[in-house]
Amino acid sequence: MSATMIKEFRLPDLGEGLTESEIVSWKVGVGDTVSLNQVIAEVETAKAVVELPSPFAGVITALHEQPGTVVEVGKPIVSFEVPDDAGASPAVATPAEAETPKRQPNLVGYGAVVESSGRPARRQRNFAAPPVEPGQTKPVGAPVVEPAETQSFERPRSTPPVRKLAKDLGVELAAVPGTGVHGLITRDDVRNFVGGGDVPVAARHLSAVADAAAPSDRAAGQGGREVRTPIKGVRKFTAAAMVASAFTAPHATEFLTVDVTPTMDLLAKLKTSRAFADHKLTPLTLVAKAVLVALRRNPSLNSRWDEANQEIVQFNYVNLGIAAATPRGLTVPNIKDADTLSLLELSEALTDLTETARAGKTAPAELADGTISITNIGVFGIDAGTPILNPGEAAILAVGAVRKMPWEFQDEVALRQVMTLSLSFDHRLVDGEQGSRFLADVGAILADPGMVLTMV
Image (cartoon, rainbow, N blue to C red; front, side):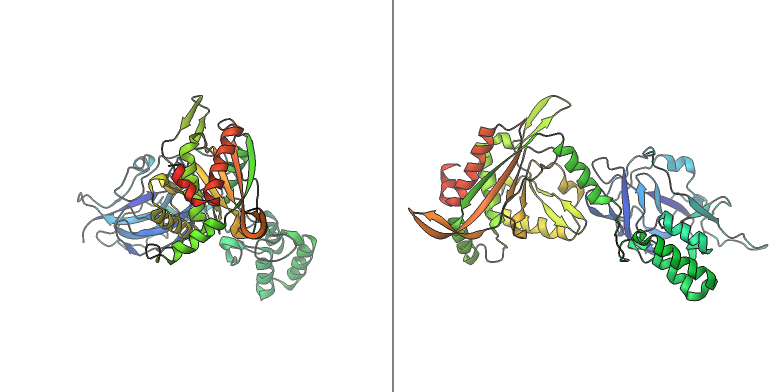
């Protein structure tokens, strides 16, 4: 048999200097044979869920982290048995070799090992490999593992109250199956285990007493008076970004209510046209186009405040962000160079962006470098709001619901389709006059789409 060696795959930097990611799921198991660039796992960064490709072709020998575990960049997550192309004796990569991860020909680049974040590390229990019986030999070509090499198993995930309860009952948590989020062991799990006859009957009474004393300690998904969910991933990143934005950029918000009946009439005509027959057109499509046109006359809203260099950066391109509600929280992917797209191309890009975001497959690159954003609160039946700026951007437009309302039309009161626009902007970059002119231009286009001819 040909010689083989063990290769470790360390969690790479998945973009923008992110320092950690959560293992969402493994697509492979120990013993599986994988090919180069085959998807082996899904990991959640602070911005999105990313598919992780294999940097090697070989056999999975160990999965070092369990789903639900947050791992720092540079930490080993999986080991492979791969052919030793150099023909050398089988060996395990030495610690010295592992100190500086090398780039591999995979779809995602490695990141450098990061320093500790300062948080207490989880204790791990190490179980050494079983000793070799006298006279037993390893198969020729099998990887050689030094006696000191151990496989790490993380202790069962649970909360301090649950661990105390288990200790009081004499229950070994490793034997208790967890039914909470990502396998979290809950009070109910311990109580059910006790009720199964694995511990003395006297302990079952103690379990009931302890549970009654702290009914709010139950984990998510187990009912009770409280539900606690760890703050991590997209939710954690979004919260930090919104706090930073709200307390860094001085927000100002303006509102404009517009009769958009002509725009809705145009939308109905476009949907019946042959060119748009197979495309999804919505009011947001036309609002996005109006924003792109209005930015040409009001470029200050497409800029960024560079605090470090004390400069205002004005963009000559538009990466249009669209706020998207996903199961993991709010994300704002953006359409690159949206200002160069036709209405047909813009509708395709919006459809792709929305479907990808809802599926949780938005790549980090699609969340970076936005220049201005739109949030469609109208889909929730909301008329207006005061949106918070996406960090690094000068403006965000909230699009309200389209409602039929009595409205002045040709000196009479008529039932018209009306929409409210809410514009928040960074007052360091955008003066009230500039913000008002931009909002008025967007409103003018939506009130009479033919106005676009006077603005291009």
